[in-house]
Amino acid sequence: MTETTVSLATPFAAYVPAEELHASGVLAVVTAGLILGSQSRSLLSGPARLHARAVWRLVDLLLEGFVFLLIGQQLAAVIPAIGDYPRSTVAAATAVTVGAVVLVRPLWLLLPTILPSHEPAPTHEPPPTPAAPAAPAAPTAPETPLTRLRLLSPHPYLSTRELVALSWSGMRGVISLAAVFALPLSIDGTGFPHRDLLVFCAYVAVLVTLVGQGLTFGPVLHRLGVRPDIDEGRRQRARARVAAADAGLRTLAVLHDRGQLPDDLILRLRTVAEERKRRSEDSLRALKRADAGRPPTASLTEAFSRVRRTMIEAERDELQLWRDTGHLSDASLRLLEDELDHEEGALPPPQPPPS
Image (cartoon, rainbow, N blue to C red; front, side, top):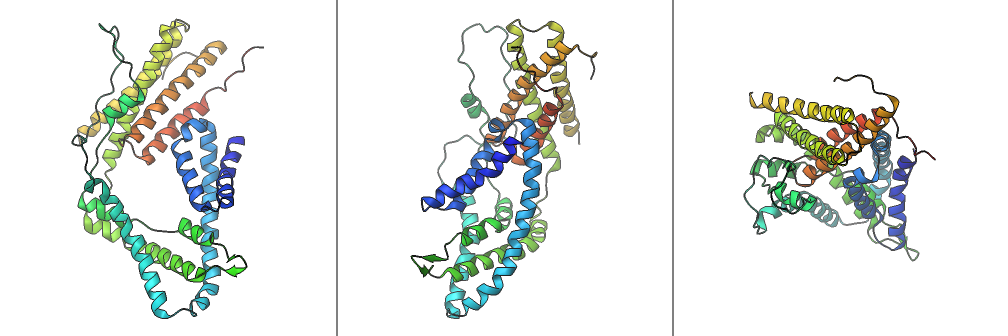
């Protein structure tokens, strides 16, 4: 509850200082959201992440409803104020605004193909996760996230059909309206220059993209022949699960080498991780072609829970690396994180150390 409350207060903590510094509070909130969204694994616990997502889904639904209700209320006041401007000015301003909104997106997507690059050609299969050597003959440099980043780093290119589809999906909505409404009503006692015209241009951009691009998005995808590759998503998640299970097994091997865990606990933990890995490998084999254990004692359950949480953290690190290197989409990362979060939430809560 505390972590969720902090996450709800974060937008205000980003907005207020930015406004006091005469910067954009809206852009500060968006930037804070992007940073926190990419770092949520290290900032929130698994149970807190599940709780916060449920709360934010409700907040998101309510805020979007209120924003579009606000559009209807404000439009009646904005349209009469536009009558003070020449029609040519209004037409030119809206045309430039909508044109910039529509054209900047494909230009941005084209940048990776325009800029020079010395990266190797892209590969469709990520390299296998290197296994920890049992007894290396000579000392080797330790593997770091940076070295693994270089191993997994892809060099993606967009086809013409993908470029058109992504360009046509740039609908505008809440953030654009929040940005224009953040403009002050007056400066030093005088009205903000051309504020009504700016608000009207933002309304037109939202309506053109939401109604125009939104209603035609399906037919455009159909005409381009772009369809979701469901099997590729399954392959992607299965490969990531295998890599995450390997990361957990490597962590378990390190803990076992310290000699502080009983053999039956190591066996149970290894069985769980290998079973998850085996299921994913079976799924991969099927896609290419077209629990056990006695009840543990209280102390064993506590140790199992503690070490399994350590393994889950290693698996989350691996999934984050896959996402950061482009081999796992955000949607798939969230789905796999949900699985680990639910598993962690099902574990007994950690016991406080004896006093």
